[in-house]
Image 1 (tube, rainbow, N blue to C red):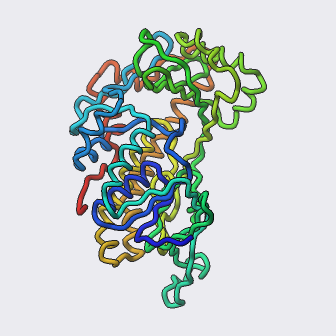
Image 2: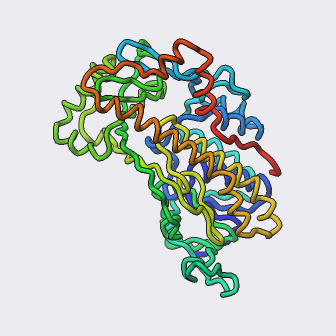
Image 3: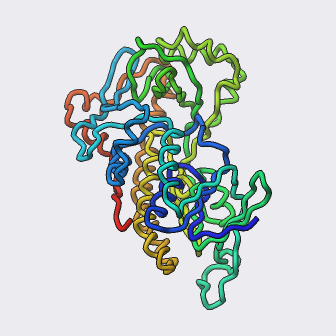
Length: 416
């Protein structure tokens, strides 16, 4: 099977669906290819930060979005045993929504894609997994002298597998939005800079009761750290562990793991039996990396494909959305006029690389100075000095609130 479009987006996550929506809104013909049959995945994050809610306001979709089931987090706090520390207060942010909306990502993606399908130039094809790139050789005079010809062949489309058989899609621009294990960036041969991540995350569900503590950033105990995400009738639990330590936990047995959970969040101790087998616990291998170069002729990487984020702060989704907005702002007019050049792709990286890199530096700092001391502690750990300061001086909570809620370079809707 063959298809043709102006922009082919590999990956139907937040970056891919938002970019598809914005380009179609501007009149660009766009095809989004998503390998799964639906958006339902427990690994998907739930946080929609004020910067993303501001974009939804600018698009006129905010009221409709907030009619979807969600919870609103107006501050971030952490439990250190029986001590509570308030970390961030979103009430003073210069945004319409002064809270983080907790909404299952599959609901957000279904909402956004349903609105995108109202545009005649938007298409979303599920169960279409991109497996390779279509390339054509550039003329010798077009090749940068420092790069080998094959590595600089122009990307002119993708190959994908579907239930109906192989699919080839030709496009003026291919956008890789297929996540931290991006097939597209691997096929493109783009260099990855690995910053290292000392953690992995174990995901599982436990039932929630009305008497449970409210939503919190984390529960800290001796050598333990866990985040609980409120999904109404159950907790989505993110239990942070040292990198590559999952197998050792499995060898100690499921009952020992249940007891660990009960020590970290004692109110869950009576419910840990809901983990009936290890299949109820899923491993998320954490990566923190970025591409040295996000693009080549005919191809651009955004979101986790360009910069895989740690789950610390839950900011990955929102950086992906910001990438999509900047990409649409910069490239929609070029695509409409068939005047896209490689310098336009470079402009996207020039705009978005710095906020991504700064965010990663903060995450690496927190890995080292927050999580490592927790993992190294054999006794109940006291709140660190910085959190004691935010407890004593509430105005300091506005600083992490801005970093988490807005980020280093929020994007706004222009030209589209």
